[in-house]
Length: 176
Image (cartoon, rainbow, N blue to C red; front, side, top):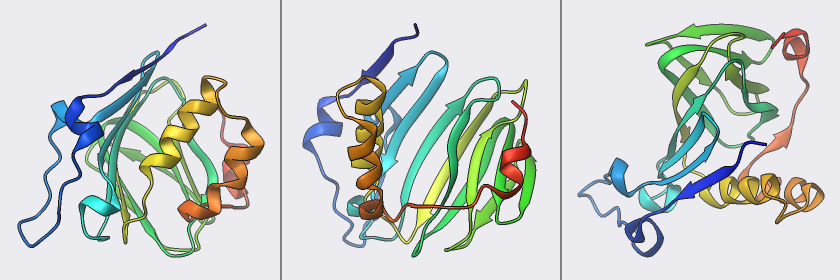
């Protein structure tokens, strides 16, 4: 079994940046990072760090791994920028194969999902705008993976993060 490892720095736990016209900076070395085998999630900026403008994180997905199954947001758009590799991104009725340097933007109320393409790795920079406090959602997801939180409680909390179930559409035909 692959173990889940969390790396946190004191700065990531104790400091909340302000967004007062001077901007917000995410220092990679200070970011909260979760690793599961070759997969990685790096929490960069949450809505509280950007005055509600956006939330941002980076993820690395190995060998066809799914980052998120079909879901939608009622208020937020989600941007997927492929830093390296190849990713499959569901956007409404379309399944898009995105490569390094490609950018995919999903509007509110549109079903979407993402994964590394089959037999490929992918690293993505993901932005949600306007920002939604999302870091606690990811921490809860980690607690589900480690058995500290049951799936039913996790699913019941998703609306608090503007996450709602969506029709899988062409995603269900995707092969991993």
